[in-house]
Image (cartoon, rainbow, N blue to C red; front, side, top):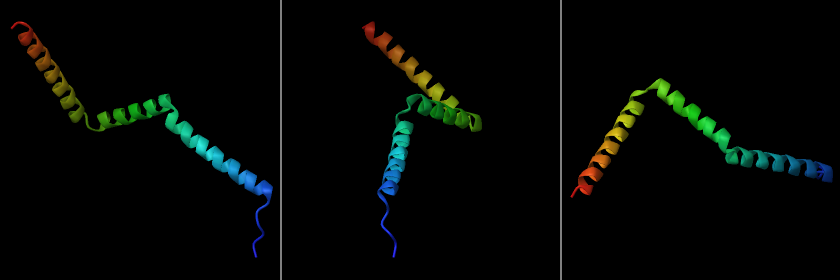
Length: 77
């Protein structure tokens, strides 16, 4: 038969669970840490295959130029 946990053991277990929860919350809310991680993933993706990134930038440039041209032509009417 297993003896029930002592109050000190239950408190230690609750503290450990609370510490783990607070660490998880801290990881999710640490914006600079998450931004660095995202930047690292982007750099790794670009280094492994830059073609999609270059194509995306060209596409954004073409879209921006098209919007500017549309706005200029529309304002002259």
